[in-house]
Length: 399
Image 1 (cartoon, rainbow, N blue to C red):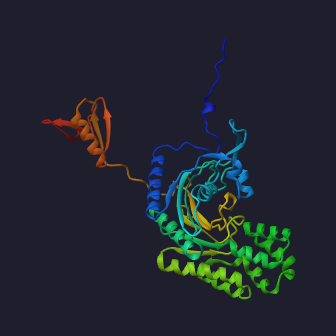
Image 2: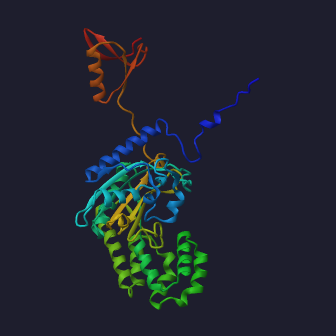
């Protein structure tokens, strides 16, 4: 007697990896087109990197987090270690530096879109397969480059129907400057970064109590107020400038941030500008301004939508150091907060007949935005293509 084993369990997808079904798949594709077209109109050329490549290329110049997120395997042809991309940004750096040979004196604008795979689930969405969309602007240093990318990110929010949004600004370069000037040893700096990342105020207060007297006097007031330097951007910047008057490098970084805020206030007055000078996201690789956009969902929760920042030196590992700034977003994670997508035009049923005039009519209707479906027998209700006096016309209700 044979025993028939159930195989239904093998059709389950792994945790954090899901099918995208109608209408969500159609929604994602609609907004993908909107973003790619927007980026193209701003001069950003689309590139499509491979979903997998050699691990040493994928992980070059990245932090430990990306290595832990990368699914790796042995290439059966070369015997080398390969990886499925967990983030497309390193691939864009490789393409810019080694394939397009971006000359430092000429700006290069690239956009990208594609699915990535992560070994670990995102703590916010639970997904391991984000649908990443983004841009990178190379060789446009300073405020001009930051502003171009920030404005494009805010235009992308409008294209997604999410405006107005809150824009949060920080500066990884400022944090690096302050730590370098502080004289902290490696262990103290690691403790500090951990506390900043977790926004652990009670523990930070204790850390400050243990370390304040060892800090330069010119930095003691800044360290005391550091975790409170968050809120409306103009006020936070004024506070930081007052605390950093004796550190010229840090002051220049704050003034650059101030210039961006003033430009954004003039260009995008509906955007709420927020600053968090204790934000260390991407500290390992960002060298300048960092930024994120947030929207409020139906539960009155602020959800991160897009994020980016400056990374000067990108591509150095591939033979050409480039100044770069960019942003990306996970379109899959945003589907629930994006506005509904209207269907195509009216649905029309067409009989499957060998008639060239009928086929021409179907093509014309589809070009006009109608959704035309072939059928063996016309339904009794709904719009149908029927032949009247030798011409194919759309007629409602065939009963």
